[in-house]
Length: 325
Image 1 (cartoon, rainbow, N blue to C red):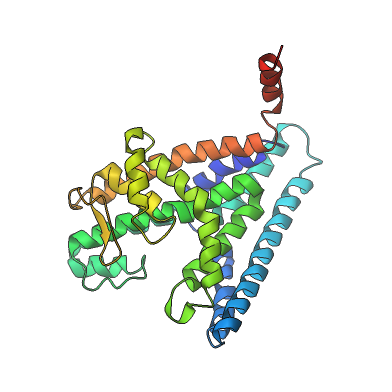
Image 2: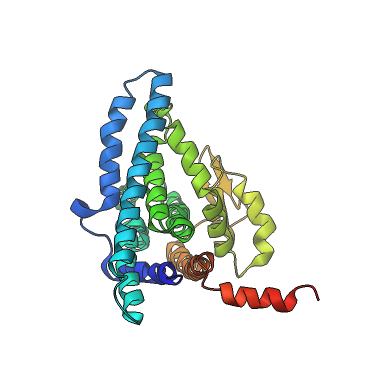
């Protein structure tokens, strides 16, 4: 079924839009977090070398468990529906696979949480800071209104990749196991990949997440400037300003498209010639992100079909007609 994965992508996004997140008790990402929390506390009590080796081993075990569980689900969906006849088989399988893919991405939750920062900020600065603290690890207590909005927009851009585009990219490449493996790796980076007490235990997780996010982050950045190709050279420059090898691509693209300055004091300043962020810019950023996601989802769905041979006959005809005479 070469179109199965292609159809599952829009189904997952529609389920996300209509229903949001599944209950925590059955959410696979919550389960991943529990595994990481259980192991993580033990790793941090070890010596640096033992913490690094233990962290790498635990990460590998967790990734394999996530991928194998996802493979079993995908295989069951496809094999279980094989006896069915006609088009109903493909439709039913795509629906079930889309439902299984949905928990690996979280566009509605990201969009709503970022929008809630602007709503809270309209009530008071303290409310805006408190709401923002649910989204970021940095201390929000001393942020100005401009900085609150900047941080919310940066979070939207970076997590557009981490929470939506990258899982869909790896789903295109490796099906449900690919999406689950990436989601585990990104969750491990979020929980373990910080300095301080996690310096050694989380080093493997942080580097692995950098590697797995490398291509999706650049796709996200390019999608955000898709209608403004003249910004490509500027995007390369802005992406290099951040310590992260990946975060600067979606954040830099968002800063350029909005023509706004985005910064994290002491770490980076993106698009320094841009105007300060103002009320209404969070909404504009949400619309840009939604448009980029729509385009990328279509491309990734077509890519999933192409990788599984949906276009093989057409490709063969092109090669025959265009080959040497």
